[in-house]
Image (cartoon, rainbow, N blue to C red; front, side, top):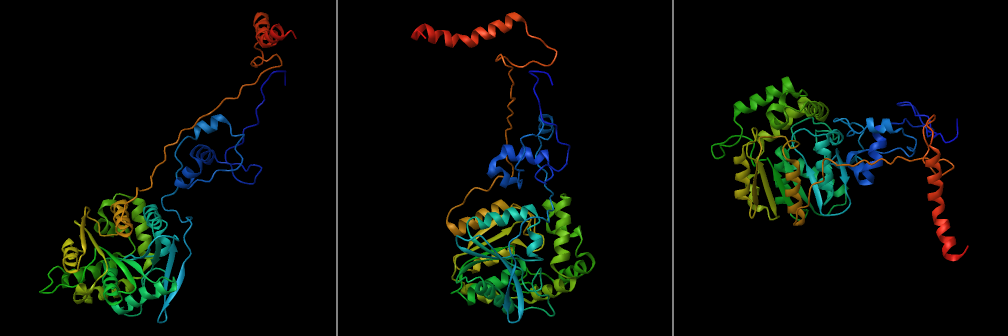
Length: 410
């Protein structure tokens, strides 16, 4: 190379291993260099340790938001452990270590590990864990808990809740019940007040079947339609239009929900749980609940009428009633940020801000200039400098020395 010529490292080829043994990816470089530690955690990007030689043209070409897969099976999940309830294994997880204890018992079909793969659900759980010690569980017959061989009872489900509290060394907790897990949470609050600090109910009911004094329950015809849907469509995405119409257009959510249904329960287990829900009736226990209670229901819920939620709120002493907008039955759809905010306010007395879903980043580049031996900016090969310009540069560089010599005589 000639004198004064700027040298640059040889650009690395796209997706070739660098000298650290990892594959170099410009997307990771940009995210790591501009977002900082907080931004990297927000988008789930870990930057490589060596990026000094990333060519500028590739950096500019890769200025786009990192695209993580929507259905991400590589997400770090909490450890799954088992509690034992009279010989039945009940799977649970604990997230967070501070704040009030919250035993979260989702209804319908659940699976502790599959749930974390959906970004909406993962964000919701992390929000709950930010202000509570969150305890998640799969009810018996679902997810990672033991499968069903017969119709479970409310008493068995209450025993399952208490076994999880015992296994996690939780003396008292707030219970969150949804859909078919609501009656068990109601019974636990009424029959075991020494273990229940509070009760949160969403989209649930006191009685599953229709009766003359309870006309808001499911009729015999509706139960038969339910059995047909389970036998013919469980494990497909066809049910999303009914249970989560707000996300029916989201193909990634549809596929995740179908996966949750297939892995979370067998058709026989869902039919047995349906028989349990059809026979359940905890109306006599409502007046015995002394714990603070929050009852919420989405106004357009197409499976469990909002009237079922109003019935609960009117008969539980001191219950707070909240009608939430939306037409979804599925817990994982709808406005989960608003739901988390209501839970936080109920548990702590105040409501924090939801974590941002996007991070706005600014990328700045600095072009390092090289200088030749005269102190002038290096020119491209073949481009000369006029003698006058060189003399002017040397004179400007020597001016401070002349001023010092004139002032101090040296």
